[in-house]
Image 1: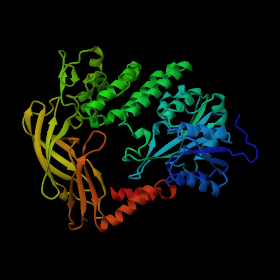
Image 2 (image 1 turned 90 degrees about the vertical axis):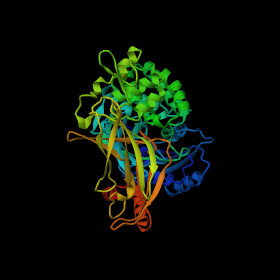
Image 3 (image 1 turned 180 degrees about the horizontal axis):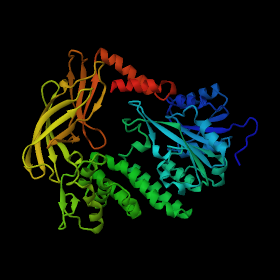
Image 4 (image 1 turned 45 degrees about the vertical axis):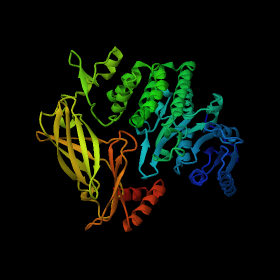
Length: 564
């Protein structure tokens, strides 16, 4: 039966955990105070902050009798202890959790509580909106899982939900947590993954609502010491923690009789957790890669074969190269993940089957994973053919000019022998900058050329342009075109120049550098200077700060569109 409250008892306790975040805590708490459902309790659980957080928290509690301030006697170093201590004093029959750098939409509590009151469930969950702090851009976390309202009789009804492992997107019945003694594991990171896996498996029934119930702020370029735990993937301890949690989940699945879900959980680890590290591999040095392989390979060996088989071929290639300790090649392969970038070379066996790299693999497992037959490298239409374009040299020219030495790899020999027509494409404004150049053959499957680009010639909007673009390379053959990424040397220093005022275009500062994450594309960024900057920068800041508010969402999208 749904929980019954007594007079004076709040319906829901929302715990806001905080550590050294005095600046953002008021925003998080304000989002709870604004909830359309008013009968709630707010517990600020402070993990022994050493900044101004205690004073701020006490002032917030003094303004609203619904707020209680809890300060832990010692810093726990994670999210679990402050949540668990708040659970001990929470008075409501339903519980939610909020991080101090995030917010709740104003209807979040009402939506999730209504789902609980509609039928007897163990928890309700909804959509999570991700908001980039640098651009204000919004997206939905795992949208395919929360697209429609539904009630499930256990995780077996949709094991894909392992991918939605956030504890903060849910409202839990206190009776459910107490019945199973379900608490956050203390002393480890990635506690949400274990807690959520346990909640999914122990719940007899739960409801999903498609409306947003959590606003998750993402700071992709935060300083290393300020980045969230999930964004500290450069730390090998981060890798170790993530694998430790996976082993705890595996043990729980076995002990709780949910071993049948192991393949689905393994697939989630490969497709989500490992995939995040794989995307960073191009930026890691040899020592880091070797240590990474030492950490992950013993665990990768325990995963179910079916979980590997469900992955796209490009991801299976990276995994196999890591497992075989072909680490330099793994870094090369990782630069193409999600972008259809070809390897530099393929090798065929006696039967003509193509394999990634310069040799036919030795083991049957490696041959199965590195076999590229399904990619149809030599038969797919030219517009979808896979090539690899890499910059081998960048030279600064006069003004805002740069000269690029480009090498194109054609491992399937799709291009005819002889010089090739190519063009560099760049579109910071409405009109595309197209710079033709020629690629000359060096050896079968490899072409090289040079292209000079005057970035001052790019057509910018009259109002100015503040943003980033990634140049593309377009090949033309028999009237058909093929457009692909342009990969940059990862170590070259940024080149910055000033684009002066021209008729109809404000002055800008333009920077050419390698992309700081992902495959490492060549990146060109523009920043208005002078009077234009004084207009655009405050607008951009206001959009990023206020974009979460429903009343300004449409206006924010219009402004963002104008700035693009």
